[in-house]
Every structure is written in C-alpha cells, then in structure tokens.
Image (cartoon, rainbow, N blue to C red; front, side, top):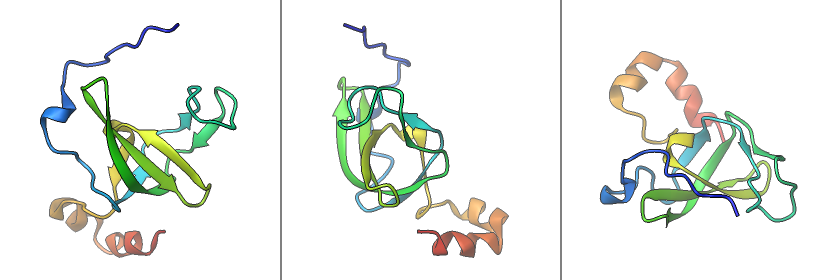
Length: 111
C-alpha cells in the first residue's frame, strides 16, 4: 500500500471552503486517474488544464484538505479535486476583472 503524504502543513478545513456549490471553475492542471476513478486505467487523463466544470459537492480528506467534486459536463466526468488545482470563473476579484477589461465579458460566455 502506498503511503499518503501530507504535502503541506496547512489545515484547509480550519477555514471555510474556497469554492461553493454550483460555482463555475476551471482546472489549473491536467488531472490523471490515481486509481480512484472507476472505468479508466491508472494514469489516464480525466481533466485537461483549462477544462471548465461546476462544483457539485464538497468533502474533506485526511481531516486536512477540502476535496471538491467537480462535474465536467463536456466529458461527463465528476472528479475530486483540491483547491490548488482549481480557479473560479464566477467570483473573480474586482482587481482581476479590471485587468481583464473586455475579456472579462468573454468569461461569462464560457460554459
């Protein structure tokens, strides 16, 4: 059996979840099957960087991390992801929206 490594000392669950139910998010990295996704081989790509999905549930892992179940409607997959693997598309800070200018409107049309 593989040892589970706690990759940082931060206890995420001490704070409220970063994302909320129904929030539109984008994958910040490519996610491969670690063996917990049925129907795919270990190492198969489940989600590519830039894929858009919606948070459908929020759980915890090792009493340390939030795990967000994200429904990627384009693929039909529901994948568990950490906050560091996701970025919101619905709740961008005002300073970021100002930097994006007209491109911020394009984000609203992404689905």
